[in-house]
Every structure is written in structure tokens, then in C-alpha cells.
Image (cartoon, rainbow over all chains, first blue to last red; front, side, top):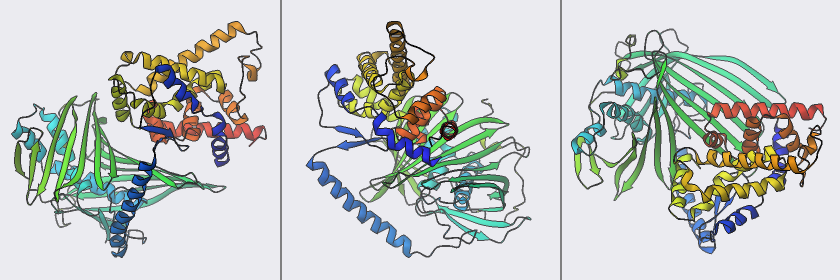
Length: 405
Length: 175
């Protein structure tokens, strides 16, 4: 297969359109050459073309990048890692997504992020800070359903934008499972959050052929959140060739005893090495299924640009599409989460200043509002009645009586 | 470039900011081009039709309904123009349509063999995905976005296309 790919790539220049085509179009449309010039790069996408100024900027950017790498990588490499579940390297995931390089790390991530959503739901009707801010500011007449959406995912935002790593550590297995793991992270206020998972890992099948391999694994077990035990299962498929690999991972926590309701997270990854370096892309998709119907789907993109983290969520509920972007920034030394997005076609924008014990909201007109974070002890500690089973119907999402499929 | 950003550039262009053209063109031209190339199977004609597509589309930008996938809109215009080209030439040039390599009798620039085979044996959607993933250099996620398809479908069709092409070339001793 890779011979075909190489052949296609090698002969691409003979087939792709000449650059003169663009010039001709511009000439025909009367578009003059602008200062902002771009060119298609061989590997796809675009690259800006510029003069000397751009070269100087590129050098500055490179120096800055080196400085950031040194600032980040040295402390990380100096930190002792925790033993991983399978005896591999550390279970720490420092930048939440990029650190997820194997199935165990993914399941730790899955447990932490799905656990965050479940935990938020478990706190049962606790008014979200964002929701409270909406109401307090009276800037928008949003529906309860929309508030619920933001509310549900704020816990996930906290787990992904919070300082430090998602950590995982093996523990003694219980409940008849082969493995045990605790996962933890810090929320935006620095509070520790932790969940427990017991599980079995199975090798399903594999194929090996002339340098190419395909392997499938699965896990099944229980995730304990706030003392409630949710059945979980996951799959991990990986295909590898010489210069590229693809993997698909899924993690599902059932929220009803009949297993017709669940929250699932999947990751699809591509890593390619085109000879000029390796490039990876990941897409995380959360699906909330209620009574066999997909009630909500959310794609998460996590980007780091110029030292600032950005979390983008695209949420689909039936025909309704919502988009929320959370930017982790620093303003005059203070931590700020900039939120903007579209809810039902209406633009929303505000800032959340993360302060000691509270969130301080500032709206676009300069008005502000302070709110305590809802007080919920996330730490299940493993000492609760861990054998509690999920309720017959998953009431956490039951604000929505309406089934959307 | 994701569709959200693409829409922003369309909006900029619509409001008279011509500097957005470069970005729009780079983000979309290869998808449109391969849509056309599959039909005309000739680089020179495909390039000419690609030009016509952008000129026509951008001259009537007000007809584009914002948020409905700009790349797909361009592709549909390119496809129509390519089919018109085929119709026009089939009327003008007498040719033996049973001979695939001279399907349209107007071939000016021969494509490399593997591309010719791909166009012959693959259905349009698989050809397009293969070209975008393997030749144009887009990531599968970008292709999925561009074609409004789930990424799993793009991956599957890309793999199917590669398998078919491999089998065909192996049979012919060309791989």
C-alpha cells in the first residue's frame, strides 16, 4: 500500500494545477497582488510568503519556541514519572491531549473527562457559574436547555484547561477485575479531582503483513465517580506502516442499567511522516446517548498557539448546533478564560477571571459579576459504597425529558 | 482550513476585501481541481476549467448561501463546467468512445499512468478522496470537513481506493 502512496506523491507535481492558474484567475477578476501572499505547500494547506520582515519574524518565533521548549521540557523531564498501568512509562498527561500516546493514557483521559461530565451531572442541578453569570448579567435570554449544555461541559472544560497533568496511577484491582487505576487532575481553582477505574484488558485480534500491522484491543470494567459505579468499555485499534500510523480509541461509560444510555468519547488520530517531519492530528468526539438515541454530540479541539491554550467545542443536539471556544490566557499576570461562541445562532462572549475561591465574570459592556464555584466534593476516595449501580434512568441529563431521535 | 475559517474569508471577499482570495483559493482549489480532472482526465483542460470555475463563482458570490460549505459549492460549479466541456467536445470531435484512453478525443496532456488507472477504476467519490488525501496532501480530517463526510467514511474510502489501485496495478505488473 505504501508503494502506491509513494508513487502518487512522487507524481503529484505532474498532476497538480500550475501556480499560473491562480494568477490568471486574479487577472481575470481584476484582483491586484496584495501584501498577504500565500502558497500551497506540497503537504497541503498554505504557507505565507513574505519578505525579509517575515524571515526576521520567523527567526524571532523560532527563538521564542526554543525558549518555550526549554522552559517546559526541562522541568517535565526532570520530574519523576509515575509507574504506568502496564509497567511502561509515566502515566502523566501534561498537555491533556498530546500526551495521550498509548491506550492506557487514553483510557486515563477517557475516565477523567467522562468522569468530569458524570461528576458535574452528579452534583445535580448545581447552578453553573457560567449559567449563573448569564442569569446575573441578564445579557442573554438563553433557555434552560442551553444553560444545561454549558453547565454540563464546564466541568469538562475545567478538567482540560486546569493546571497540571491528568495523572494516572495503578492501584490494587478489585471487584474481580485484573487492573485498577486512579485518575486525577486539577480543576481551574487548583482543587484535586479523582476517579477510580477497575478493568480487564483484552487482546482481540491482530494482523501482520510485510511491515504493516493491525491490532485490536478492548477493555471492560467500572468507573467510580462520586461513589457511583458506571460500567465502562473501550476499544483500541491501531494500524501501523513504515511512515504513518492510524489509531481509533473509544471509551464508553454506561449511564443506565439497560445500557441504552451512555457517554462515549472517541479519538481518531493520524500520524504521518512525509519526510519533512512528522505531523499528528487528533479529533475527540463525545457522544451522549439516551435510551438508544444520540442526544448530543460534541467535538473537542484542543490547540496551543503562541503559548495560549484554546479549547473549542462544537455541540450538536438534533438540528441545533452550538459552538463554544474557551481560551486560557494571562492578563496582567492573572488567569483569564475567554469564552466566546454561538448558542442558537446568537453570539455570546465574556471573560472569566479565575480568582481565589471564585470566578469573576466580565461581560462585553464592562459589567461584571462574581460567583462561587459550585461546591462539590469530587473525590470519590474509593471509600464510598463503590458498588452502587447507576440509576435506572440517567437523571443527570434528565433535565431533557425530550428525546431527540 | 476548517469550514468556519473558510466562511470568514468568503465574508471578507464578499465585503470587497480581495486579500482573502489567496486564502480561499489555496484552501479549495485542489478539491475543485480533482473534481474536474476526474471528468475531463486532462491536466490542461482541468486547469482551464478550474480558472473558469473561480471566475464564475466569485463573479456571483452573492449567490452562495453562507454556511452551506463553500468548497462544495465551488465543486458543484466545477463539475457542471467539466460536464459541459465533455458535452461540447463530444459534439465537436468524432471519437471512439470505446477506447478509454481517448475517451473524449481531446486529450492534450497525458496523465501519469497511475492517475489514469485511478480515474478509470475508481468511483468518483473514492477517486476524489484518494487524490485529496494522497496527492493534494490534505489530512483526512480536512477532507472530511471539505466534503461534509464523517472522518471514518473518508478513511474507509481512502483505504478502499488504495486497495483497488494496488490490486489493479499488481495485476498489470505496474506496482
